[in-house]
Image 1: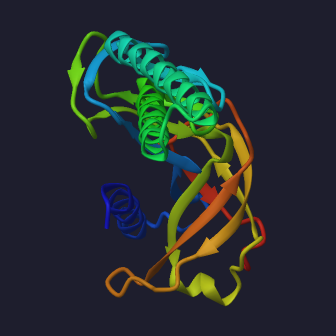
Image 2: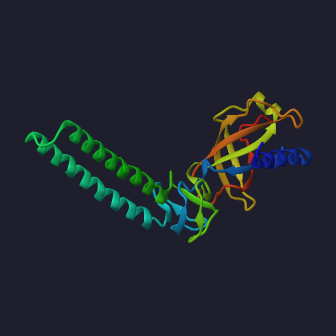
Image 3: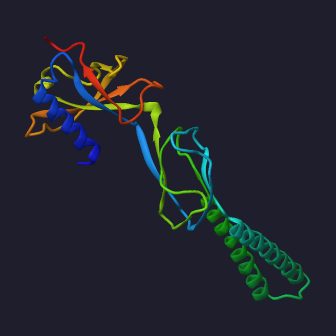
Length: 241
């Protein structure tokens, strides 16, 4: 069980002890619909971060850029070599047509041209790693590196969350299974008194044997006020009295 779920369980256990499953509501923690740790796919020096902590971004936005001057120079050299190898191959073909070049010479030139072209594709694929783009729209939750820092392959750079599809997780008494089903409405209330609506999306397939509670997940509508990590009070309008 990860730390987030442990936190939810602790909230639920505390709620049971304090009678939190009464009218005042059930503690629920807000989580992102999607979250990810973006890592470096190449070793090198970070040129700059285009986003800061908490910043919003669209899908495809370049979040981090690496210094790739050396790889760009390698690409230019590879393109020049590929061009030369292709022209040599074409020249050999023309000479073969005149009877001045043999089949082996033409084959060797073709192989050299193919190898040079493959080198261009390889460096192009490496240059694609010089920038880290957002896989979806979201916000920056944590920066794990800094501009001008040299990182290795696989080193975490930043954590992002998709706040467009927020969820809430909570633990309710197993007795709720008598009436609680996916699609059931849920009302959430912040400590400041603001209300938000949601619907139950999933129920865990297993009851916790110690607390006799079951984990429930609910989908929330988009709201600028809600961010992952917030704790709200959840209540079920259609709960039998």
